[in-house]
Image (cartoon, rainbow, N blue to C red; front, side):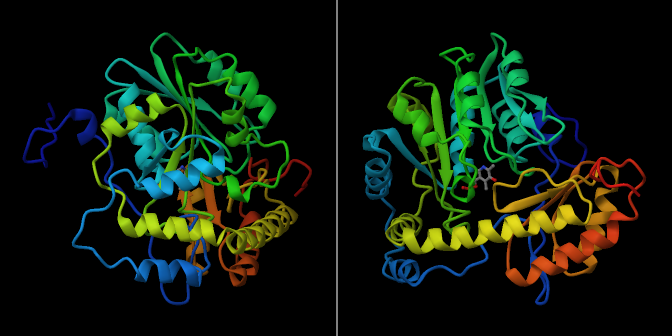
Length: 373
Ligand SMILES: *Cc1c(COP(=O)(O)O)cnc(C)c1O
């Protein structure tokens, strides 16, 4: 039990040791909020109408979100029981980690990656095993495979990787999964899959269709490309019995009727939404190229965000963005993630990046090797 002096009750020590959650700052009126990888576009009219038609908030939602499950099942060519809906895909990740790993067990993931992963393992009472990214900020899948022990219960692969941006290729993923014991869960977190333009990228739908690896579960969300972050809805596709285990650890009725109808309306409006996604992907490529032209070493960006490896200078560089009315997400000692938001923010981002790069010490890892200063 804890001896944390400021907690009035006994709390599990590993929980007491967790830093309190800090959300990305809310933007002031003239600032751009580029800290949470949100979609800058307003919801489409069909989505707003669907929400307005769901006013029976005195009733509980359908516990299994059957209509949305059927819709997604048809799209992925699977049965409805091979789809599981959660209040955001983060909650499904938590369910799957809880279902597979407890005290003494290990959960492997790349680092740096999604900030929720360490927390998922700790809350389950398991041990998180972090495998460093490569020099170019990509998953080191051979090293992740080598990290598997007989205590490993789950591995998380994030493609494109949040917050650094690169994808895992299909070939890399296939070679990796072939090395993972068949009874170890592999969660392929594809929160940003809709933004991917690299044809080499792993595609969870293809992995599932091959049927070769029933231990792989694919996770996607309506929060990013579909712009429903505020409603909390995501999904997993995979083996029925694995998803049953997730359902058993889930908090019942946490997916609201509003989230379900908005997700269905978004799928109805998919063509319009994907046109917006293409616009964001184009803006991302332009932003990443412009940042590289300033001399920053920006890794491949395949999500709706770019990464500046600011290292030890992260907090001071982050402050420069803040001063310019750009709310970004600094990860102290490592780098800065900047979401691709409004078009009007692009030039401002590039201007700040160009102004701070001269302050970086010579040989800093955030500066491209070819740039001589
Ligand atoms: C945003 C994100 C998610 C899911 O977010 P939800 O809003 O909970 O659906 C999952 N994984 C990664 C890597 C993310 O960045």
